[in-house]
Length: 166
Image (cartoon, rainbow, N blue to C red):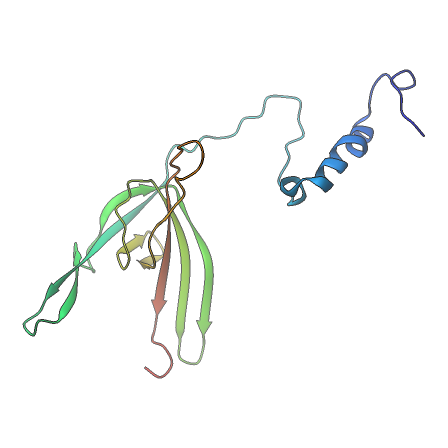
């Protein structure tokens, strides 16, 4: 049956969904991934990020010991609270547990401002979750077409216990 404006001066919500929304969802990669859609005619208020999470940052450096071996040195010391920085947030990426030898590995991503001074092997203290090591270089997404610098993504790792056989 063909729908015309003479027969139906108004579209019902179900009709609009079947005529417009469902074909768009089927054709769109973004809509087919299942985003949350706020179906409202009133103004939608989305809270603005006003404050982030504060983390402690401990920078790794190196120096030579009495035998001219390179030794990692942390500023401040590894067991001291780090320099406090406000970050956008953190998320647990994966957790691995080897029960017999009690090896626990947690991997997190830390979303930080563009000026966050992190490098490989630096340490980050996450309140209530312990100390993590930065693995790899910070991921920087600033090369988009509009010059927008949203910040960096740091990949972090925390290992508790020892690896089997060590």
